[in-house]
Structures are given as C-alpha cells and as structure tokens.
Image (cartoon, rainbow, N blue to C red; front, side, top):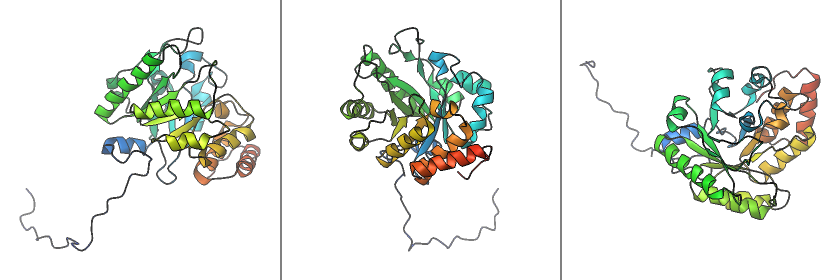
Length: 298
C-alpha cells in the first residue's frame, strides 16, 4: 500500500500552460507516439536528418565488393550511423544486439540480379519485424516498371501492417535503366509513395529541380548514394541533397567501398548534421584518413 501519510499535492503550476510542441519530422505530427519514437531512432532530433548506412545489397547481389565479410567491413562503421538498412539474415548473424539506434529492415525481395528485379514480393512478416525490434521496414517501389502495381501493393500492405504496430514504412523508389532520372519522374514516384501512406521515401538526387521533388513530397526524403563515386563527388552529392531539402542520405557503396570507410562515414555525418561544405567535409575525410581514422565528434 502507498504511504498512508500522503501529503496533499499543492504545486499544480496552474499559471503555466502545458507545452504541446510539434514533432520535428516533416509530415509526422499526427503519427502515434510509438511511430514517432521509432522515427527518432532513425532521424537525429537535433538536426532532423539521418545518415543511413545501407548494406542490404546482398539480398540480390550476393557478397559484392565491400560486403564480403560484414562482421569485418561493416560492424566497425555502425557506431557512426544513425540507422542501419539491412536484411534480417545479416541482422541476426552479424550485428551486435548492443546497437541501440534504428534498424531499417529490408522487407521485400525475390529475384536475384540474374532475373527481372522489379518482380518482388513482401519477404518478411510483421511478426518478424516486431521480433527484431525494427524501427522501419523498407520496400522497393517500381513506378513505371513492368510490375508497378504489385510493388505499390507490396508497399501499401506494409503500410497497413506497420501502422497497426507503430513501425514506419520506407518506400524505396527504384528506377529502371530504361527510365529517365529527372525531377518530373522523381516528383511522380515520391509523391505516389507518400500519398499511399509511406512514412518516408528514399529516392535519387537529380541535378536540376531536386528542390521541387522535396517540396512536393509531404514526408521526409532521404537520397540514395547510388553507384560508387570519388569521395569528393559523393560528399558534394550529399551536400547538394540536404541543402535542397533532403532529410538525410542512405549511403552504402560510397562508404563501404571507400578507400577509408571510417573516415568517409564521419565526413558524411559532417555534411548531414553540421552543414559542412563539400570542401570542409573532404578535408575532414583526408585528415581522418591520414590520421588512421580516429573517431571524430558526431
């Protein structure tokens, strides 16, 4: 029983209204508490941005360059990432459970690089996502592709399942080789995903009009790093994207295939969270690379 000598409460601060602040992330104010809490494990509440480390490539590519040994090549990088994007197999076998930031689980799959990649299905259950304590589930959406409708329905099914349990859905706009990667296409693909319920969207940066892509999308956009670029170019890409409205980057090959991955991911963090210029970030990369990549303040 509670202490019977319970002094009557007096300090109600009746003259101080209760604060009701909006959630920091675009388009997320009306989400449930659990969903917001998980998003805060993906996006840094101080900057409103994220550095996602993507290494889910093996689900269709196999052990590609830089991912031959995830335990040796990737695990040393995870302390610098705001969130990890990966498959359940790699999560269980290779990632220490002491990692406490957000996990974005690759939830779609099916064909390998030997087949038509757009023909994907949902590859995990919501029970599995809950069991793995993930913050978000990621699904490819092939707008304009042969299996467009199936991929859109994959996404909406994940949205329904995720909303039921407070888990975010990341829609990944996959662009076929026959499609033009311009702002018009990106506006269409990202807006479709947002309209149909995606919590946030991953897409590609375009040189002309990218600010219209982020402006027209009512949920956060993170950019894909894409193919491996020279480090200075990758940092310029990240800088351009966040300055034009992206809420962060989801980089894989431009980090784990870098000559100095630990230095590179820290330089990317400088661009995303500290608004470093591309030159400042590249100088940081060179300094860390030459100094044996000693950890820098995040």
